[in-house]
View 1 (cartoon, rainbow, N blue to C red):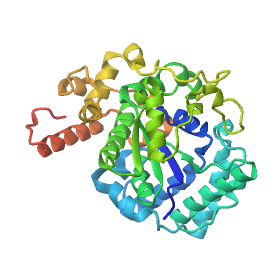
View 2: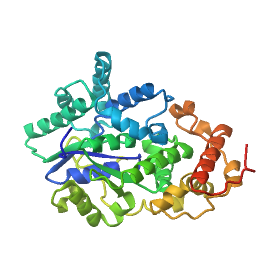
View 3: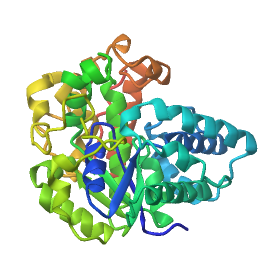
View 4: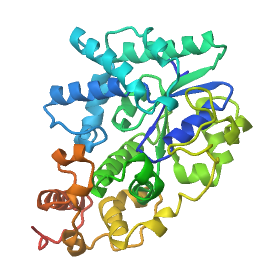
Amino acid sequence: MTSSNTIFVSGLFRSGTTLTARMLSAHPAVHVAYQPLFPLFRAAAKAFREFRGLATTPMGAPELIENGEWERLREWLWSYEFTANQVSSLLEELLGELAIDASEKDDFAKDAFRRIEWGTFGKIFNSAARGFRGELEKRGNFAALVGFKEIWCDAFIPALAANGVKCARMIRDPRGIVASRNHGRYLREGAGGVKYPILFIARAWRASAEIATAMENNDNHLALKYEDLVTEPERALKNLCDFLNIEYSAKMMDANEYRDGFGTPWKGNVNTDQHDGINTNGCERWKRELSEDEVFLCEFLCGDAMVKLGYETITDTKDLDRFLALDEDPAAAESWLAEYGHTLSKQTKSEELTRISREADADGMKYDARHSL
């Protein structure tokens, strides 16, 4: 088991994970590294899917969470031993992916990787944390808490928490995620004009919400809403510091303290001269940028979980006819997602109707069986 001086920040893309990591790292006692271990989680996900006979899916897809799989992953993960061939590939991938979002990543990450002790997932994860701590100390940073920020890794949070890692997980209104990812500057400059299908986002969000509910009373898990972070930042950050058992520092509120991996002023996820700090513009951006159909689709696919997490819906989330009439253009979506069937189609609409029927049965509600494909 690891100790509680290791932090893991996660959540869906465009949900404030990087902002939270930069805020934490502005604290004199904390350092959170930006996405250095994604290949480790990806390799573990692949091995677990093979172990369980699950279909190949992209990271973030719900298959590692749904139907109790997150509980099986929690029991399996920490002691899973990587083979020599896996280790060789993993080290190559860890080093190779340092070039992705390079300015965000610690300039000493390569040196930290040399300190990794290979073997089980737990051994690799713990030694990576020690490696980053050691490299920080060589540079005069004696942070009491060291950890990692990753996305696409919600399924791993129960296992990490069970092994002593303090997991801070970001939650954001799914309509806000769609607006941030599929519209505006990030779409143009950060995503090359290519969108994620709303169905894919919604399925990942629902799975994330399932973990949030399951981990609600876990002492090593804190669910932090993006909307709370930007509308009441001091209160949210004090709550986060309490969770981590550290004193609050006002530096966490000062955007001038936010640094990228090279120690220079952080520019945010889309290049600007400097990140302009905390603002509430993103909270209701979806009201300005999403079409009526986009809002409806988000709410239809996520409505019940949204309500449980305090997000109010504004459309008729039970309008099956409207749902069945909608389509998403696969050609407008990320090409790497095309093979996984996470855009609206006859097949995926049928899958969603089956889900609705199953959930209605579980809640003792009547499902309108007239709606079929």
